[in-house]
Amino acid sequence: MKILFLVRHAKSSRDDPSLRDRERPLDDRGYQDALTMGKRLSKRGVNPDLLVSSPALRALTTAQVIADEIGYQKDVVVDERLYASSPHDLLALICSLDDKLNHVMLFGHNPEFSDLAQRLSSEIIDMRTCAVAEFRFDAKSWANLREIGPANVSLDAPNK
Image (tube, rainbow, N blue to C red; front, side):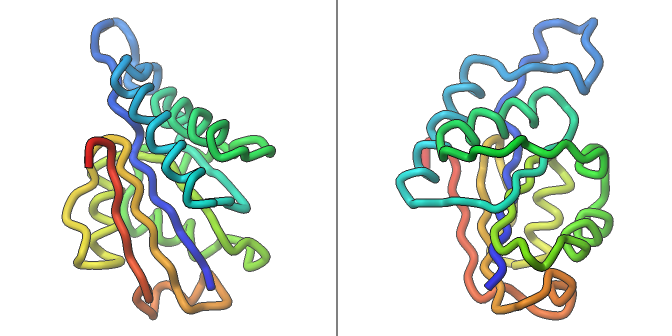
């Protein structure tokens, strides 16, 4: 079983127009939403083998807050391919994951994450900020995800 979590970054601040897009921080609500989702994931016993984040500050901060809440002890891996990507490129990244990894959590952006989630399952239409989509696949290899649909899909978000 391969389990993929797609986590859209929490709400970010646009208060400082001088910041580049990658430098935008979470706003207060975003930080609280990341804490909320981290606590929910922790209560469910979610224990990923790998966390990978976009280099954008808002995604990386979301990843770090959730990592702390679920007790993830390793470094969050930063991967440029999760920023300003396409659903096709994201799927290629997922299919290239090491098969020794069974539970992987990716942190990134819309519209790419919503588009990929919908491509993986028609059950998910949109991922609002800090939404967590979970896909469970009856597969031994990440490469097989191109050919099979998930056995189970769920979507959770703050204030849900």
